[in-house]
Image 1 (cartoon, protein in one colour):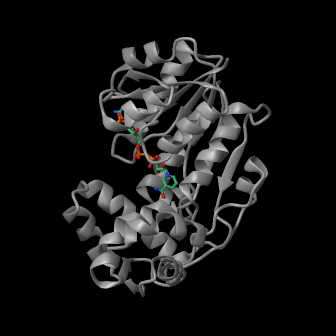
Image 2 (tube, helix red, strand yellow):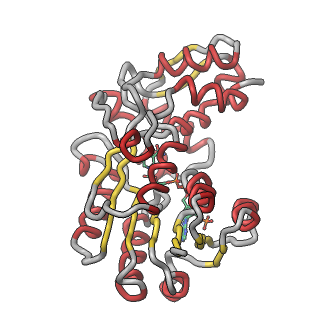
Length: 290
Ligand SMILES: NC(=O)c1ccc[n+]([C@@H]2O[C@H](COP(=O)([O-])OP(=O)(O)OC[C@H]3O[C@@H](n4cnc5c(N)ncnc54)[C@H](OP(=O)(O)O)[C@@H]3O)[C@@H](O)[C@H]2O)c1
């Protein structure tokens, strides 16, 4: 049975990816800094081998990589993301040079190096392509589940506060990202592919508000907020200033330029059309209801 190490397995995508890999019969090892945490425990109960490790601790990466066939690499957005991804690549070169790396990148506004997170992803993807490792890269667009962060406004006064102006983008459901990653990690023939993953249509926040209205039965109205106010509210919600600013750079790029290109990436990998915003709203509507 193939052994897959998931780095970032306790995060937003990882929590859907790890069960998907287990269901498809893989042996899954999850690296986490906190094996006693609630998410790690849940993944262990589902059948994953949970190991303590840290991208800042090279020896822990070497130990986690022992005997693995595949590695899923998901890094959290932070000023350290470049170093963290670099540490994982170097550890694979040392300790699992024959393993296949599937790395989650991102589809960011163009030019990719025009934003801090876009630059991170471009540099990491370049490093992987020149690493000598076997690799596949996925670049999903904005996750629908990010919208849950705006649920407070919807619940308190029926307003979806977002800084996207009239910008549109083909946002994607995290479950489709995870299912696509499962396919890439469990089937052959995806070496050296860069898969751009989108949802089924490019939509703006007005359309999201319509979907939430329908799903919750309560009127939801999109209210465009200035980008500076959005950055401030991320900081007030506890995000470090660097991350608040980096997120808002991306949002500003999508607000100003939009992005209408829809890809067939999810269809081709999973065999089904990607979930719509109405599917997302129906399944996650309870987060937006009092
Ligand atoms: N949100 C979007 O719309 C979007 C769209 C496209 C691409 N992306 C990209 O997706 C990635 C984030 O994915 P996500 O949201 O699933 O991740 P996430 O929820 O931010 O969690 C990532 C994981 O990072 C782990 N982690 C953090 N620091 C670590 C360290 N020092 N050593 C080991 N593990 C560490 C955490 O594990 P523990 O805490 O358990 O150690 C957690 O499992 C980013 O690269 C982002 O740019 C996001």
